[in-house]
Image (cartoon, rainbow, N blue to C red):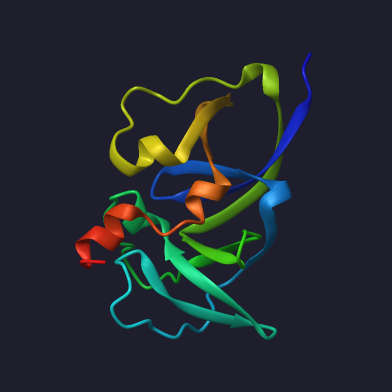
Length: 151
């Protein structure tokens, strides 16, 4: 048996994602945001959380998924990152789960584009896949977004 890894898990559409808990500061309900003019598409704004400013990145936009539907607000996964924190906007917060790292597998071949860069691998859980995000890459503003804005 290998070591147990712990992940903060969340949903985007029907997909279950996880980020290593060591990178997560906290999870929060929707926060008031200030828009940033001329920012890349995935930057939805800035959040002031107890005097600390976080860039809010929409993971749906980043992963080329359809926009969030309905009235349900986005949730925030606050990451500690070099140069300041980042809030990842997700559909729903799940649980913290522990998984045996011996069951870690390479990312599925079906992943493409930005998802291929952000997903490190997967764990098979009871009838579902846990897609493991690279916290450092997820916290960066994508090069694709900057290119679309002409930066």
